[in-house]
Image 1 (cartoon, rainbow, N blue to C red):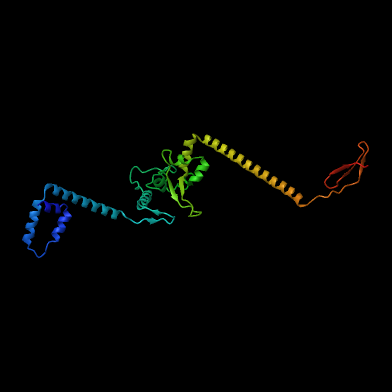
Image 2: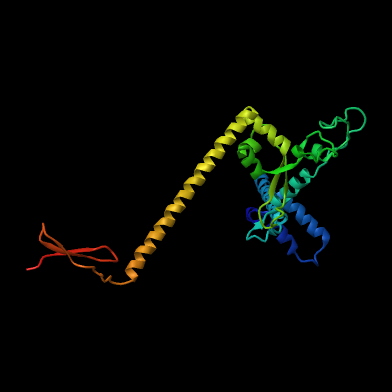
Length: 282
């Protein structure tokens, strides 16, 4: 029986042997043979068969997981592919941005800061959490301002807008001048003004800082202007010098001869360039 037990070390070999039996044999003989073989297996062999069976199941599950995990990447049209998880997260972010809070009904309705009237819902309240009704949202300080303009006008930094608690809410829109340019972040002007006062302490301090910034800009402009004037003068002088060289050798046109008794010398002066030629006569 030791030779027969070595044959059935694995369950697959055992099933292959059963399938290779002559199908014309009697059913009772096959069942008796199976029972005889099962009783002849030791506990060690049964454990080995069970272990191999578990390995086969684990391998099958792993293959199914890999097969199901394969998915098509989306071509972004910008030279790279978007993984499905990124696409899902982007869709989730957009759906989260589009979530609308339910309108207020009954007691607890917000009151507009401008007209002091109660309202159930409004665009500024839903988007920027700012209690202003739709009738008053067209006021100047309730308009939207781009991130670049907010930083330039109120001397703010990125951390002042997006990192300082609480971060200011914004909406993203495509650039109306050119859709190929980057998307714009639009903030509520009222909230940006409030954040500027929070950063600089007071309106006077903000105005003083703006004046300093304007002074620095004027100094920079003056320096750039002086530099351009200097470069222009150098170009003009260089052109005059090169013009003299292009004219060729200058021929003096001397005037009348003048005698100097004290030095006992004679001289002639060019009428064009003023060159004076001094000489003696023997």
